[in-house]
Length: 312
Image 1 (cartoon, rainbow, N blue to C red):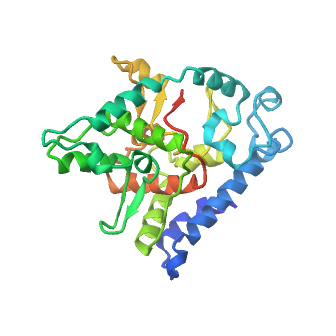
Image 2 (image 1 turned 60 degrees about the vertical axis):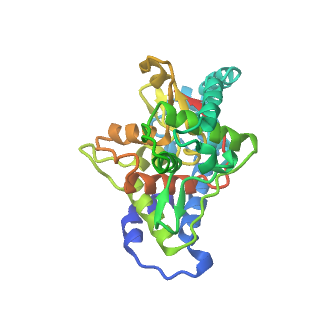
């Protein structure tokens, strides 16, 4: 069923649909439920269903590494959800998570005064809400607003310079917000409450499933059909749950950062992923990127927020 979604996305995005006020998320909800059904079926019994879902996996992988019987909430862990070896390493690292110190630094940034005497607390009086309400569709602005955009809007409104959207202060402040939401056991709850919001969702979905670049790949090739398959020494993670844990600390980023702050935003990760597909990634605050993240976040609706987290 999910493959049909991938093949018909462009047509769906261009089809005008008359919806009642309470049904603007009807198509998105069908997509989300289909995605859950697809991944639960894919990982129900990987060894038995290898010809359907895992034709390139080895006998050893299927017997000794790929975990079966996964359910909706399990997928929030990315490829650690289905990899025994990866999960063991993940659990070990989480005993002393590398993100703790940056949550504290993020709280300091939250309370630090701007030149005008105000602070982020004036823009985001409730850190828990800030960590759980984005991305959102702003009905007044008629556009998707991500947490990254909202933070830079706050800086601009207070006469401060905008921050780098990928690393540095941006993911550090986000780490504090998201940790606050995680502590309160908030779930992803993206709203689609208007025709304009539904259209933004459809454009984000279209981007996700449209082949681009010289490699003629789309996001779904790796993270829907290819989820669980191995590329070199890494297993491809699944779309379901992709946005629940950002910002993340990545070993790859930490190794390149002279300050050893390997934290990065969701925009940074998506930009790198799109680049790996042989495409030019959309800019972090562009309409394309915002709507792509809006679609992806809706696919994680109902899942617990568990960031900031660790990934390779």
